[in-house]
Image (cartoon, rainbow, N blue to C red; front, side, top):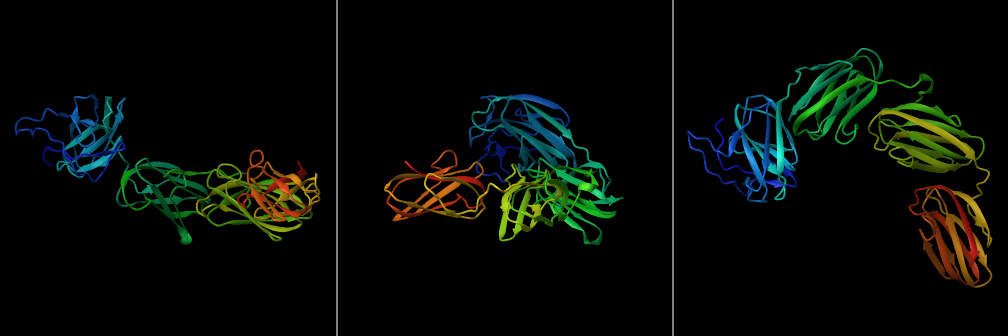
Length: 455
């Protein structure tokens, strides 16, 4: 490589220097053959450099930000990391001898393709960014391995193409593989004996990948890549065994006992359990997992309901009044992807207080009932004398919604009561009316209280 020459091409957008830059140049005196530019100080890899961006620093003519630059000698095939610290709100940019931007970030990492002198630019994010800064640089040393053990931890570098490793499993068990990176969108693929294949994109949260599964003994091929097969950056692979709960409580199917808690293992296919009710009951099903986004389905006896995040966070909960019969509960993930442990808990409540949904309603009467998701409960009542009346639907478990129809009246209400309760206040003429109780989105269910009274 030759010594860099001016002008540099640089642009900044929102604090991040954009890769394909064009449109303006930083004009500065060109150094003579025997006298280096005073604007470009030397910086050696591994040393710490302190400086400050002030109103006297070089000017970025496009956005008014200020910058300073250093000559950084680097050797071929060196993996370098340069981090910006200090009070300055800024960004680093690395250029080759053709003034081509190679990488830009507050902490940049890059594999050097050719030995020579590179230019490192320290820039403020915008025209108001000033202050002292510190630049720390280092060579990143990586292990040159192609086989992974259990347990193991390995730092790798992706340079456009995927990295492939051999993973040998000695005994049957539950294993977890994670790929984490602050530089790229991690993606894992695992292939093994008897046609085994699993893959994951964001299972570890954010843009990190995680595979967790029961693995049989044998040799597996693990591929670490980016989500779209492009980009470069540093990543960490971690392979480790995971402990299982007590074997007596690990069940991937079968009949659910009343008021029990069990553990299961989800690996991409929904797991089916059977719930048998000898008498009507209010059933609560909770599915909790820290490995994936839990999803529950319940089918049977004319009922078909599901839930994603009703248990808080990414846990699922179904609360349902069920008649005697057999019901199928399916435990899976929201997206059908991911894998991991989950806990499934079944609780039965007394359904004696839940009245048949719908029917006749007397003025001044208050009834309690249970509403199934997607169902409309219809009650009829008669008004004998014209006047102002109030219909209330109250629930602490769902967003109540009321409809009133009859004798030329058609009214609706969502949150006219307190909180998410519904209330209709209206002048009603003598006649027959229908009060229809449901939820706002027709997707929830739960207990509610309904009343009609004269004002």
